[in-house]
Structure formats: C-alpha cells, structure tokens
Length: 325
Image (tube, rainbow, N blue to C red):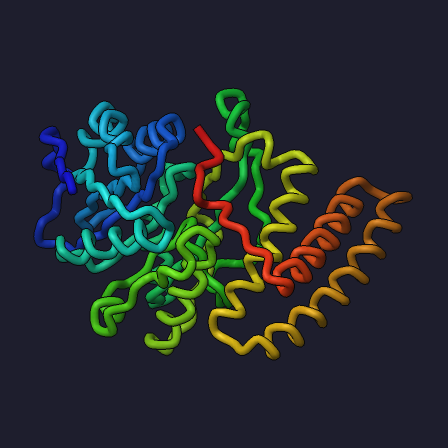
C-alpha cells in the first residue's frame, strides 16, 4: 500500500467543519485517460458548505498511476490522496474507495471512473439535486464521446441517452456518475461483491442492496453531466456488437449468482426469444428506413445470442484488461 497527498492545497476551498464529499477515481493502467480526468477535476466548481477531497485508487501494484497523479494540477484545487489496491478487480478497487473514504470521515461519496471527466458544475449540481429532492442516492448522465477526437469534439453537442427530468426515480444505479450517502454503507457494512471481479455488474448489485437498506429509491439528476471517453474500437459496429454479445453473457452470470439454474434458464430463454424477435423486426425495418434502427436490431440479436451462450456456461471477463490509454 502507498498513500501520498499533494502539499499545495487552496486553503480557501478547504472547509474542515463542513460535511465531507469524497470524489473517488478508480484506475488501472490508463495513464492518458486518468491524466485528462484529473485535469478536468482540477477545474470543477467547488460547492459551498462542503469539504471536498479526491481519492485516486490505483489497481496496479506497480503504482503506474502515481506519476500521473503527482503531475496533475488537481492538488492545487483539492485535498488529494493516492492509494494502491494490489488485488485486481472491479469490486476490489471500489471497496478500497469505500474504505478510504470512510476512514477519512466522509459523509458523501461520488464515483468517477478514470475514462470519465466532469462538467465544471458537475459536483455542485449533484449536491444541489440531493438537497432539493432529499435523496440519498443521485444518479446522473454519462455521455459517450470519442477519445481520439476529443480535442476537436464539441461537448455542447453531446446528448445523454436518457432525457428523464431531474427527480425521476432510477431503477438500477451504476457507478459511472453517482453521489451517495455512506451512513447505511457503514451501518450494514455493505461492500461490492467480489463475484463480479471482472465481469462487471458489481455496481448494480451493490446499489440494489443499498436501496433496499435505505428504503428509498435513487433519483435522476439530468444536469450533472459527466463524459466517458470511448476508444474508436468500441464505437464502431463490430465493437458494439461484441459488447452486446458479451453483455448478454455477463447478464446471465449476474442473474445466476442470485437465482437457481432453473429460474435463470427460464428467464433468459424467454428474454432471448423476444430479444431475437424484436431485433429481427428492427433489422428488417432498418434495411429500408435507417441505419440507426438496423444497428439497434443487430445489437438486440447479439445480446440474445449472448444470453444463450451464457446459459451454456460461456463466461467473459472483459474487465481483466483495460481498453483505453
């Protein structure tokens, strides 16, 4: 384990008597993306009446992110900590985020992945939505943007997939852009399940359990924008079909973790049938109407095939290796 803290902190931003919000960035061998994320975090508007700290958890025991962390200007804006979690895995690194945030007396935690970066008003907007709706979990959009063309990309033209108004209840929460209260996490000793180490889904599982303990659904905040820098191979049709297929396999594995083999088979055979049916219709319609509908139909069919592959015992571990820079 290794921990370091930037020395140059803007004292005007530190509010030691105020509630603490920890921004936690989990990273693994994506130095360029991490550097961009930290640079953007150095420009965020700090909310009034909160003490904000940044915790970067490096999932590489060789500390490959240390140099990027120490070179970033974010330490002049925020109290910053660098930590190494040597055990590889999505759940492991997120659990280390929880541990480090709780150890520092944090009341609120906001996750930001290393391939993401925030809008300037991101954190202040999340906290304003929390106060407005008295919510303990606030989910916000993550808008995909092309990594290779990011320097020339107009972020103002990017739009989130969901257009739900702020305050709308959220069914399943992911860790991409979320703010949540740590009281129940500490009270019930909630952690991310190691079963999801490399298949993903650890965030949905964790937040489903957190919502159950809190007795309160998460809410949507449409205005707190974050962006995900996506490499070109993931944006083309081949990459999207591959992810739909592997996502179908992963969904079976996630469901099977909490249900019987029979229940899993019945559930996904039914889903596969209807996904194939609707996907085929979209493909046929898309051939004479739009490429977008055609691609959507092909992805539906790929997901259905993934369901069937998952039922045969096929496994994927997409998150064992990084796909960015």
